[in-house]
Length: 261
View 1 (cartoon, rainbow, N blue to C red):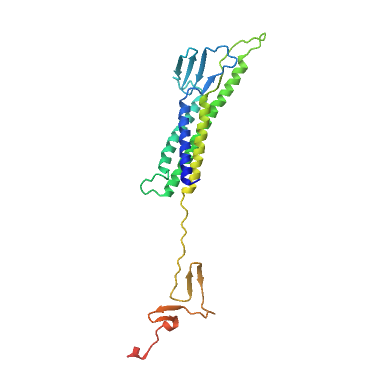
View 2: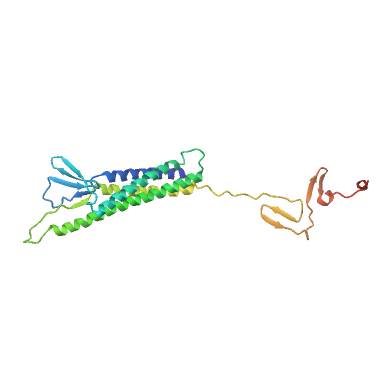
């Protein structure tokens, strides 16, 4: 898979997961009434993070918001905070990833800058998905605990007859939407981090340039530093003069009789 395809697919998957997180947070079916062995079927109750609703058999639905903050359970407030943090991080990740897309050119932005932005958005998406998964899991654990506690106190043993009937709640559709959305956001963030490696430019390999000095004691070549002493060498360095190729000793000027005139 090419880098552009991996980055684009990660962006699309993360965007779908982010939309799912928003939908799950706004949904009212986080917990729904358990209808198993429930003698009352004319009324159906379900609850969300922000309000509780009652639906009658006639089709009429009435919802009432939670108008208190301190009166809510601490676990519910923690779930709210986790979902809100996940959405905020998702917004930041989307904004950063849009500018980090390789198919979008903004000015003279280099690939190294896009690689850093892609890695940042991937990490933010991963944290956002983890927040959503933890929030939904905490709420599900709270439902399971309340369900079994209600089941334990629901039936009394007085002549084998049922004393009280309590409303029990089970998993709602919003929980499954939140789990899937958190997983998609997490997967998209991982794909963005993988695409970052392909966007990082390779280190430039500078090739050594051959340099021949005028002297014959030290020679430079592309293979590294090499020092020669000149002992035991029968070869003489040659230079090109106007008159043709001569050895270095022949190319040196010797005094003549005209030099003293």
